[in-house]
Image (spheres, rainbow, N blue to C red):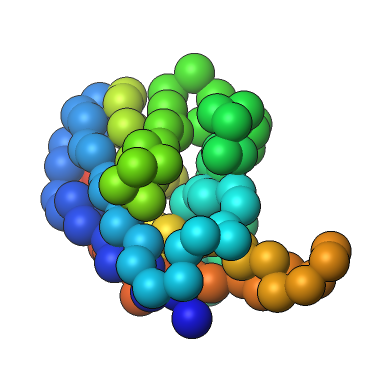
Length: 120
């Protein structure tokens, strides 16, 4: 099993910044990509950003140029720097990773989530 614990959410005004952190523990040796998803009230969860162990990143179009994902493999930690925040970024943000079970079989893990609220 892999445990993910997020921190860094909160309330911020539009245009402000927040930095989310997520520490993974447990059976992290076989984990691959890490990332962040978010879910706003009444909407489906969407993947915001992902990063491979090698540092390759991917972003949702809605956050490109404003959010930056990074990771520290030695600390099994992933970060999400969020700049120029907008009210529509308001959501619960969830940390994500996946662990290889065998061959090409992977299991997804999600954290408990941290609330981000952007006021206008």
